[in-house]
Image 1: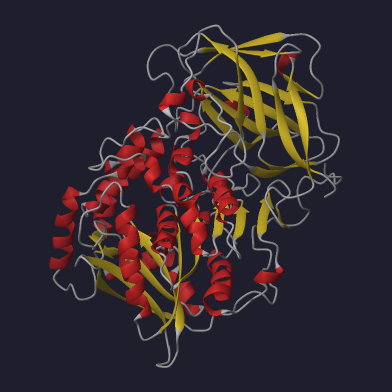
Image 2: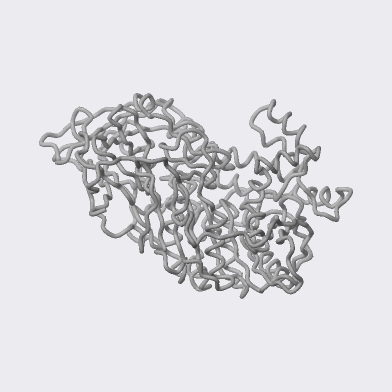
Length: 626
């Protein structure tokens, strides 16, 4: 346990990097950046559209490393009026479309190459649902093209957010000698594990991403908007996808978009598949989701020797766990892990203590430039002297460093479910049962960690005061803590439950009840009861409870028969202040984001058993001596 009674810092809170204001910070080497675009032909003749940013004033003898990101979306927009483009640039819209921030990297002395995958944007070809093979092959050809440029020093790093982070990991499979480091950010390591948490389906996210992909592939960008009014507004502002420089009449773009009519949609497979071993129904080839998961290819990634910078946010869907597992399994020298107080993309400070829509003060581009400087041109800006793991403790609002994950110096604090909605320090003396009829209207809001922000990172992950939301849930709350307690790691919850339904969902929230009765969301975990089977032989090093998600491992639910279930909550780092209470809140639905279980019929009755005859408790990973 922590010994400090402070729940929050005394001064202004910030998520600025740990090195902010120190000599390790970078000064831009160039005053500006220049962008040009072109098609790059790959080995089968397919032309891929690419934007290339170079530092302004680059000398003819200068040789610089390059960064690459490869997107299944689009790399940029064409606006109807120059004024609209200027306003979009001022608002950072172009940077969001071409994540990450190419102009920043160019000013820091990197070339930046942003490529649309075949079947995307202004690139020709057809996008397949199983597009890993095309990405690896095409990526190797683009790396050849980059290293042949007169400005190239022969070294390339790959990075990107979400799907772009996924393609950066795939690029390591090409075994290209120029690839010197990768920095996958806010993305997945095990696709099934990330997109089907506990066997549940994040319906809102998958529907939103599918709508966006169809709009982009057909160059109907306005159809990305969620309602008619916004679609009209977007149509008035945006002409469509930005073509390449030598496509003056738009004929090349039109021809490329015609190629996209036959695209397969991986998101439809993600939404349709319920099990890890289920064949994807919309793919032309017989394959499961696993064929594209980096976890499936981790030995090849490890064998590449490429340093991996896994970078994520505590409130980014289930991707924080994914970044941890990527880091733990890469094992390549120079690899790093950073987890901050962010939702998807890291554009906003998403700790509950940072109220409002507050942009991050963490300079991601500069942090990545420090990493790539070391591995692409041998310039060490203090990175080698730092511990490889950095994490941000919310509630305390402070960065910390560690030599490993989980950080050393931890212990386990167990709290038992007791009668009258209590969490208690010792197992209750008498057995007790709490009945809870699932409230189908319970939810976390459309901007929570599994909500709309996952489709673009255009706002923070938001969890307003949970007091009203908890009225729809079954809650267990501890007595006020006598000292501040830091929970850092992977909480585990063990429950004994029976139900009157053939299947049901359990969603468990860990919460912080403040002395003024406001309630902050800390983290959560979920499980579909028929997916409760635990497997003791995970295919990769993972923390928490491993369940295969295979149809062959389903366990039927016998109505009225108690089941013991252990589920891992998503990892976190949170400081409960002195006088605060720990709460477990249990739901069976999240109407805003998850498909209901069961999909039809009356809401299930869940009966939770506690006491000496049953196992019912939460194990909190607490830090000691800090």
